[in-house]
Image (cartoon, rainbow, N blue to C red; front, side, top):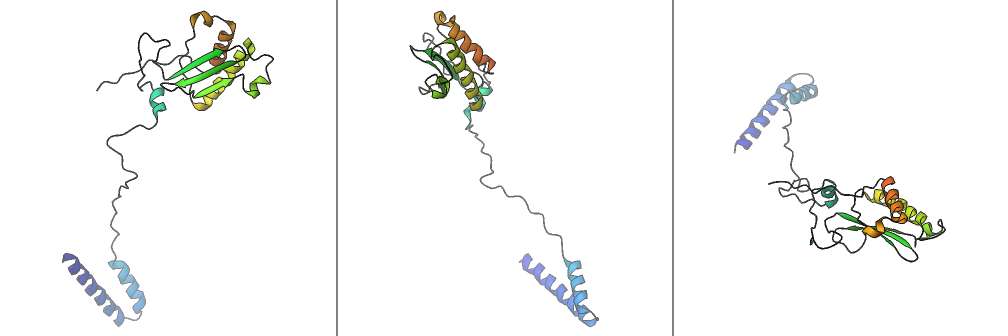
Length: 194
């Protein structure tokens, strides 16, 4: 009801202005001036929150790599007696067969490698004299380091069997990975108290 009363009063004022302007010479100019004088500033609108822009009170992180890089993601501990240890985000596995050299990066709990590089690939095979020598191990390390950087993986765990660790091929692979900018150890997991 108050809205109707305000509307009725505004209409009466407007009609009174028109009648007064009609008595003077230039009715149209006076009418425009009076309407401008009577207009009010537009009310400020309150912003409405769209459902797409609302922030959920329980936030679920859909990018687990972010938590891994901050060392906040949960690492699977596994059993103490298992070797190699299961406490990692990414694990590097380097293997030499009778004919080829292969390196693979596994995520925690996955049986399928995230990244891999091998001398079976034609791009590497055609550049090498032998697919199993020390130079092949170094080439695999350089290419895998580049692929890791492109994938955003810069830290991973690498533990080799101790009696094979001292070989020249394994050492050249490790130095190629380090020179490529990959750190072969992961930060300790951080625990946040409640």
